Image 1 (cartoon, one colour):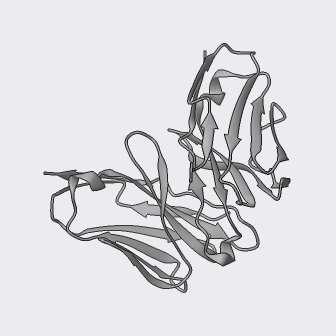
Image 2 (cartoon, helix red, strand yellow):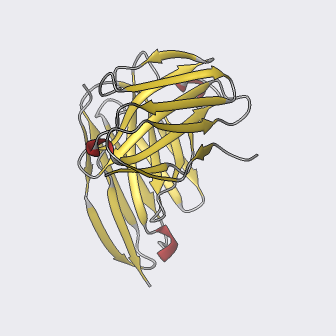
Image 3 (cartoon, one colour):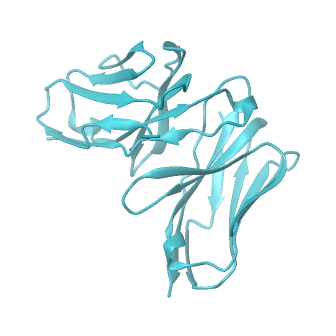
Amino acid sequence: DAGVIQSPRHEVTEMGQEVTLRCKPISGHDYLFWYRQTMMRGLELLIYFNNNVPIDDSGMPEDRFSAKMPNASFSTLKIQPSEPRDSAVYFCASSPGPRWSNQPQHFGDGTRLSIL
Amino acid sequence: KNEVEQSPQNLTAQEGEFITINCSYSVGISALHWLQQHPGGGIVSLFMLSSGKKKHGRLIATINIQEKHSSLHITASHPRDSAVYICAPNNFGNEKLTFGTGTRLTIIP
């Protein structure tokens, strides 16, 4: 099993540019999560999907952030326009079932984003 | 909102020592995750538990739902256990996790 695959691993771009982060979940996993990790705030849930449908996006910081899951094997997190305070590590995770099935989440290696 | 507290924030110990990391939370939950984040940044789920105790090798996780408290124990600690350990309760009614600030563990040979 290849695990959760995120791309790119690192992204450095200038303020105001559009940034697109990509995630391929583990095949067969019905849940997909996007997280952000910063020194100040630690890990935070941004949004999660169940069967490609966004369930809870209350963690998305503002309208500059959007996430899509067009099919079961691909999701994107987009920031437009990007700002320096968006600099963080963004993790994608997937899970085969809901929490009551005792299924853990599997994390990707993360995308380290730096906005200059 | 679930307030999650971990202690200690930092822990340095000699190889072989028994390690305990504690996690307290403020709101009832359906389950709790323990995560391990290595210096390279990758995150691995160690345990997901909703009651009692679970054991994987040298790692043991316990949870007391009534007292809103969980502990992670490492027996015969080894330098490769050096990492940040994060507790993440699962809120009732949805799949959302709330994360503790983490415990940075360093095991000295």
